[in-house]
Length: 223
Image 1: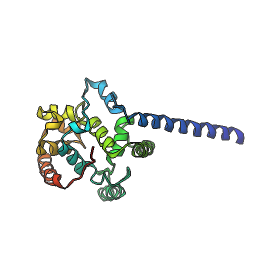
Image 2: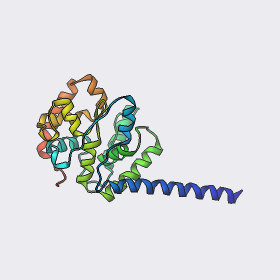
Image 3: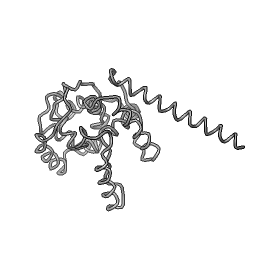
Image 4: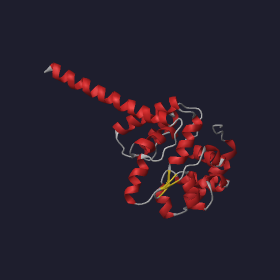
């Protein structure tokens, strides 16, 4: 019986290692290959046509890069995939509220989820997200990670990436966004489908103004 359990344990370890090697292979491909699809896009297609068009880093407005960092990950250029201060702050807010009201995931973690995983709030998914985030940080530059995130993040109802979002909301290309438009797009990221249907709320307007004021203070990864 002991030998049987050891054999099963060995098979589980091998399967787990094989799974991580598979993810690592997918991450390494991203060094020179742009994704044509993501896990989130694939699920969205079950409900209709997806809007998505890739734009290289230099063809996305710098103000959008700054706005997204302000909104989603202020210490992106400093951390190695995990913002421990942000995680601690999110845990404190959730504890005070008695329910999940704040995340704490970095852009790298969000990219891992968007590319390969689901939005399920399970420990298994969070552990896998963390492992992929480490792979992304070790394999890719900060510029490449941000480029991938801007191009694959969901910005509306079946709207993915900065280019599709800029056309959807403002009728311009991603490199033509004004500071105000860039700031507003960053505000939509936490609840893209909701704001796509609901439109601009008082919160969106106030948050947009605040982010716009912070734009000159933000450093972004250089090409």
